[in-house]
Image (cartoon, rainbow, N blue to C red):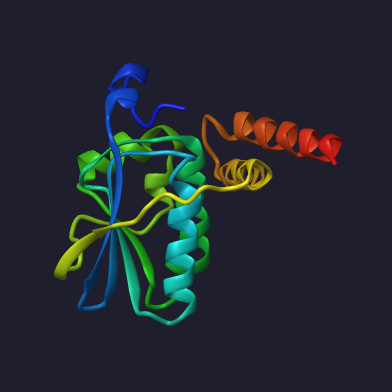
Length: 177
């Protein structure tokens, strides 16, 4: 699924994907440069959950340099928001300009659901690249299914399509067992 109307498949495919992390005064910043896809989302989710599960302050997911988010990554962000972005105070937030947020989230209406700020926590020290971990094919399928299930819970033009994808993947996983 395209993240925004101006994103084309060829542009998205050409963009590199880099996930960087750094320490901030409040906790950590995770930055997505280029594409955020199902390839990076399990690693990003696990890393952020590990940080926030250890009470390591807050995490800002910086999308200022992000050019594209696929539906799996969008569902991953929604899941992180549900677990950590609805606490008081929120421990997880997305940072992007209003224009970037519309581009990345507008078609799914997630810009109306997520904690989005145009200000990212200042970074203390160096950025480090977070390598994408190899994930078992069944785990990837489960992750993709769950992310689409989360998206199917958000009212919007793609809600039914996300539900169909999650349902079909669930059936395929049951048949493969």
